[in-house]
Image: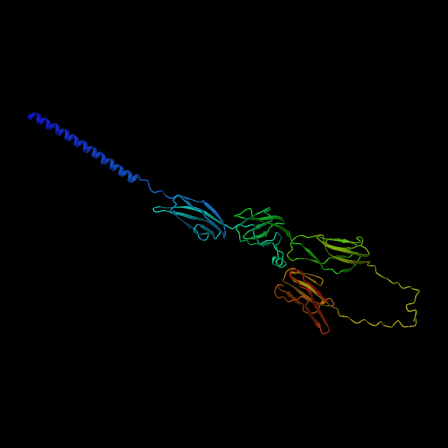
Length: 424
């Protein structure tokens, strides 16, 4: 009985212990699963959705205009805000973007919800639409090649350059790059010829401004200094007095002549040669441009003689008149004259002074019977643009003695032209 009771008690204890182990095992498994679930819930719990912003990636705005930006957000409760990166180009007010200055900047679109803030950048280009390029240049431009006395040329309105202004960012192209050069808004003549200059906007290349440029050499004019009518003897030659203008002309030139009667005179190397008696008119040309005409009267140089007839008495009307009768002696006449000599920057031809620059000087010598009579007079013309000693229309008296004087009349004295002085 005791044995059975012991065995029963043992079996009962074993069963209870096994049951407890099972219970504890289940309880432990449940606790582990619970902890795992808590961990998974904690770490793998889906977060609140971040609002998604939908709007244009870039916009273009005309300067001075505004643009309403349409913005959509996945979170209807999210607030939207715009912020400009450069308010000198674009400013924002609500969902409006105002273009206040030309250029490119960015706008930050910000969406914020209860727990999250997100944003998106968009590009804003503020442009000024132009339909034409306003450049301070005429459509047709004429420039000249200059290499001396440029200040004189500029005073005459003859230029070898032209400046321009433009308020836009521009570039240019030339159909012939040899004719002109362009640097720092200055167009400079380089070579004679024509070229087409095209300016175009850098931002809007389809907008252009076209200008035709012609570069020429300075035209030359021949100033004929001869009298309208001259007399020559057969065999004489006459060098045509002339000067060239303007003073800044530096090119080549050709002088030619035509006669209405080429048998009387001919022209060669700047001189007219008289060949036979008669009257003719010569036309003088410089580079085929008529400069003037001269009437030429050519006479023979035959010596006139009146031979005395030996049979005729010397004094037939008064044969008794004595040969001792003396012919009254002619009074001696003192002849005074003027001689001009160039000193600096001028040429002298007879009584004509041809100046070669704005400043020149010459000497006036008084001659008595072909010999120097007294001291010479030096006259200096200074810068014609400022003060100068000889005035246009001025009359200058040079006294030789009590009974004789010479008058110098300044007929013309012009800038950029030869000075023509008449002495009388």
